[in-house]
Image (cartoon, rainbow, N blue to C red; front, side):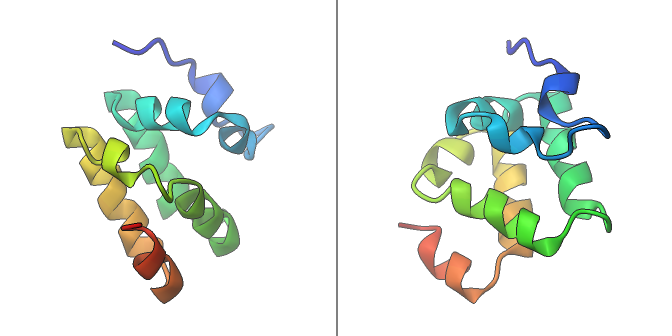
Length: 94
């Protein structure tokens, strides 16, 4: 079980803190019930620029097999696919 601290992942004062996490820690967050909901909020938020959403998706390139190797991570992977443009949809499986 992960010991995630929500204030370390995403806070109103520091909305980019999720980008400060290493990819492996982001994957662990996606596999955690509470952590996976943070991705839902991030991708659903109208105040998060689409460029930031694309950046987060791009950071997972090369790690999707680890991300989706879990029930909750697979759901986060689906969310990533939903916000991806054509370039990312072609690059993600690599």
